[in-house]
Length: 142
Image 1: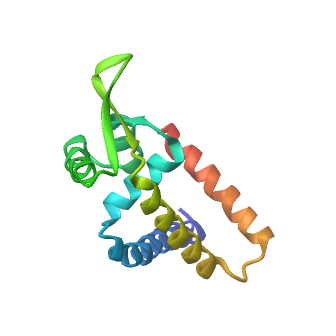
Image 2: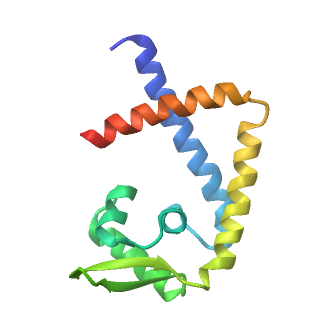
């Protein structure tokens, strides 16, 4: 592996970790841990999904996700229902009560993203996005 590849991989991991840490600190006032806000964001982006798909996307084990969903469901933010095509599977979705929380999450996320990316030329962001898309595609193949 070249030095450039190694440095890029290390920097990518460092930036992702710091970005999540920054968001985590800002979402703390909403009573949300990183694990919980990531679930809510994923559900807001990709609509009802099965628990299995949600666990795979988030990179967590099924039992871990179940505990997180139990808490979010107790707070009235998500609901789980049987999948019509597979009664063994559960489909997870946001509730109407999650709307105001999602508005706050979106506002905080947008503000944080703007602070972090301010002043970076759009062309540079486009190149970076394209590189990350290639990396993501390769990771999904394996």
